[in-house]
Length: 78
Image (cartoon, rainbow, N blue to C red):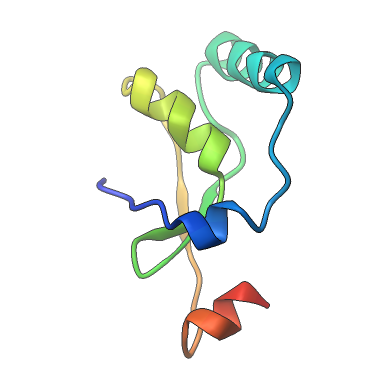
């Protein structure tokens, strides 16, 4: 799947610290899958940017996508 990152959406979610990101990565690699689906709207990631970054580095890891429905970009921000 080819998901897109929109900086506006990415910046709406507080970033993880380096330690938090490394822990998330370790958990995902240890579990062998991404449990929490990546929320997307029209192929754009709304939530799950860190998980997506990890998946890009480890494409063998299974993951799910949850397609969200919104009338426009501003509704997606809410």
